[in-house]
Length: 208
Image 1 (cartoon, rainbow, N blue to C red):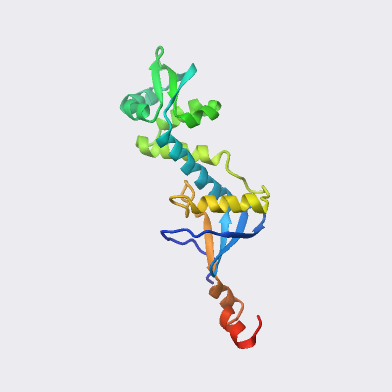
Image 2 (cartoon, helix red, strand yellow; image 1 turned 90 degrees about the horizontal axis):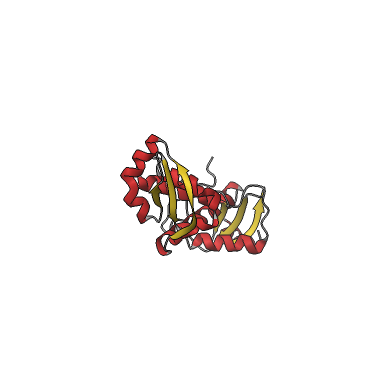
């Protein structure tokens, strides 16, 4: 039986918050459609794009106290291949003995997460390419503070999240590729309830 489903569209409408379900899904409406929005996935997308924007626009920050980092042989080889890309991303490492490096600078947004600096550097040395590794790193950074299941949202912050999602470049999926929203039209709802269509019933009977 058909039901709410992910959709592939170029644009994302401005949604009006109408309720919540199980402290995880936001219920919203736009025109004649009902949206079920995964609040965690939606917040991940918003945070991911904010991190990506800051990465593009903010200059890197030199660490006042460079952090020491141990790299495995495989990580050292990856670093040698990706040193220029890491530096372009704001991650500057300096050799400090066999298998040891000092992290001299980081992207500005990482200064708010000092405990994750080493993990981020190692993350950029994983994967088949720097681009793939960097997307994974940003997705993880977006996931950590994103609103979790079981976190109740009042109307104002829920509406603010929906508005922020609508402003995203890729609002329909989270950074991991999961859908942020499922959609069901009013006509489909009417059919599921055995109506010819909500508006048609209103016109004929003068009531629902």
